Amino acid sequence: MRRLEYRAPRKTAAFPIEFSTDSGTTQGSCRDVSETGIRAEFDCRSPLGATGVLTLRHPAHKLTLLARITHAEPSHVGFSFVFAVPEERGAAKRFVALVTEWTGAQGLRFR
Image: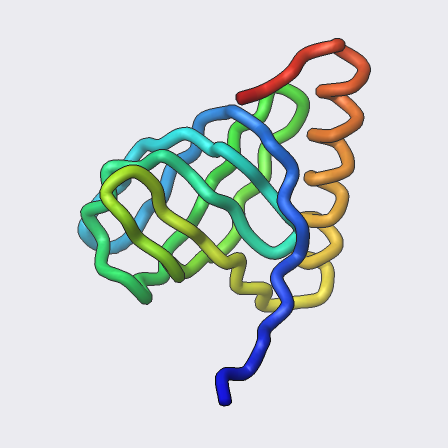
C-alpha cells in the first residue's frame, strides 16, 4: 500500500526565481508557493534530486533557501525547501504570509 504524504497547500504567485548549483545558475518563474516548497516554470538543467540555493524574488520580499528538485516535467519543476535550522522554516512561513498579504493589498491576481 502506498503511503500518503501531506504537502502544504500552495498559493498562486508569479515572480522570478533563481536556482544555483555547482554547475551554474538557472532562471525561472514561480507559479505557486507554500511554506515547504514551490512549483515553477523552469528550464531544468539539474537532475531530479539535485540540491542548490533557491532565491525567490517577489516584489514584497526576497527569500534564499537551500532546496531540492522533487518533481521535474518539461513545463515545470517542483522544489522542496531544505531547512537547516528552525529559523529557516519560520522565514518561509513569513514569506508566504507576506506574498499573500502583498497580493491582497495590491488587488492583484497572479496567474
